[in-house]
Image (cartoon, rainbow, N blue to C red; front, side):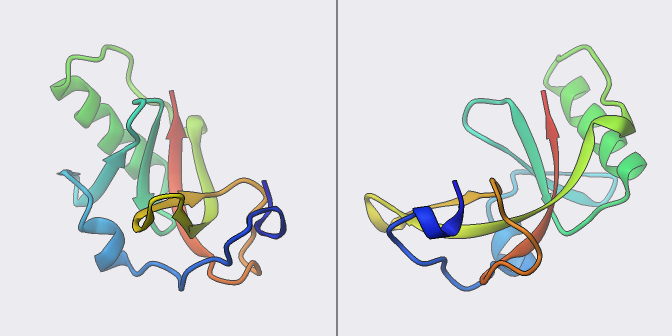
Length: 113
């Protein structure tokens, strides 16, 4: 979905501090956030692929997930924040079709499981 397809304009870009407020864990100095489904892990900014892969591997080892993350799995993306159907307390991020030039875009590093 591009921002043009969403009925709400993007919110101002998240700062590292705002993004990291939701981070429950920091590994190798990288605050990481896992989505509710457990199939994505994120960090604010464009973290070095190897550093992020090692941080996610450490997180997964603590959570007893077996396979280490390979640096080739790491993606540098851009995301925007949108207000969800529940109002301002229900915001979410999307990266589908988002580029650095998209209004409200901020950099993220992500791994898909």
